[in-house]
Amino acid sequence: MRIALFPDEYLPESTRVHGKMFHELALEFIRQGHEVVVITPGKSNQSTRLCVDFFEGVEVWRFRNGQTRGVGKVLRAINETLLSVNAWLAIKSKLAERSFDACINYSPTIFLAL
Image (cartoon, rainbow, N blue to C red; front, top):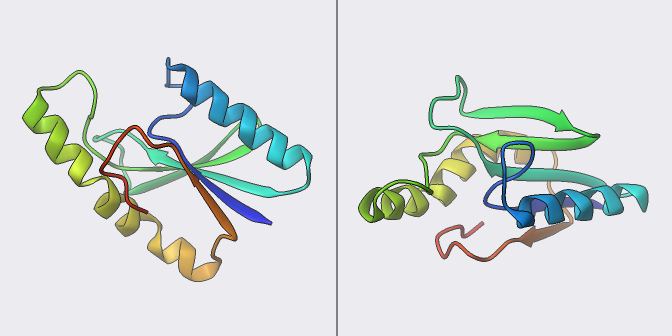
């Protein structure tokens, strides 16, 4: 099964526990024979709309998005509102190649609606 995980941040940049928990979940799914892709916001200044890399054997898609932590409430609200749009614009061509069988979303942000 091909599984997409949607945390709002991921290792190695993340310092929060949910980033590590999602990594452990991804590794367990891979151990069970599933194909896992973590789709998470990247940096606002990354050179391309989508950066694909691997972290400890887990495929990670980082889409360009503005900061959602450590900024004022208005800027955070704007950047979180744009999460879904930025994610969709970044990954839609890859989804045309091959879709996912299951999606797991981390829920703290109310704005990520994929």
